[in-house]
View 1: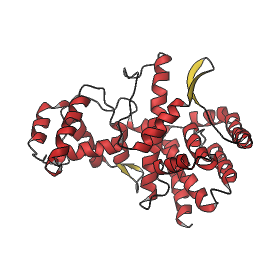
View 2: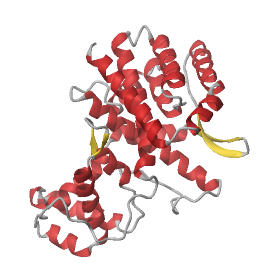
View 3: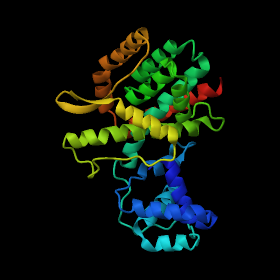
View 4: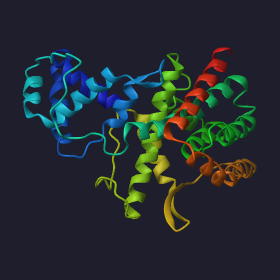
Length: 317
């Protein structure tokens, strides 16, 4: 579930009296539908619970959101209470007795290591777009992004590069606007929170692609073979569909992996982009060896420091 859905379910659980009657019935039917599915809410809960000052999860926010979701999906009497518009008395310390787990993909610590690198890339792009003219200096920006991935965070962000190369190189103005809305690059509100939300959107795309391939490889994925993203974000739904349609399953070192196809209008741009990406690939084994020796906490601390330094530079622009 995307965070916009989880936010509404939180409001439904704690404050049903504030929801118009015309909307309440539809949301109750939606909850009944979710109760029949294997629901993954942990990623959205993690996103909404993030403390930007400490770069860690706010325990009270996390418990409050998680309790709302688990209770809604596991306790029949909750729906009767909501239907009667009786608000929930929130003590912030109560814990659900439900045994149903919403953490079906990643443990929280593992989830951070999937999302925070994406946040680093988007922050870097945000910084570069302030330093350079996106329309004129698009090649400089893309090359700098690739260099940052190689030396700054030691990763190849295929999904990040796929979206950002469309912004920089695409001649389709409507598509560029759609991606900029998705990544909230032009929003007037807190840029850091917007990019954090966009980082989760990209993580959703990655998960939707990875799970079916894991199933094809015979790896355990908690019986989720055909994941569906539940969201109210039209741009996210549109771009996720496009990304999935532009994915091919390829074999690497005897294993199946989802590979993204980069579609470009100009041949010279195609040559330039692939030369940058090939340079990244050449360093992949070296990056893997370096990161494999580090603990999860060491890796996270490095990424937090990268975010902090990038943010400080942005604030001076």
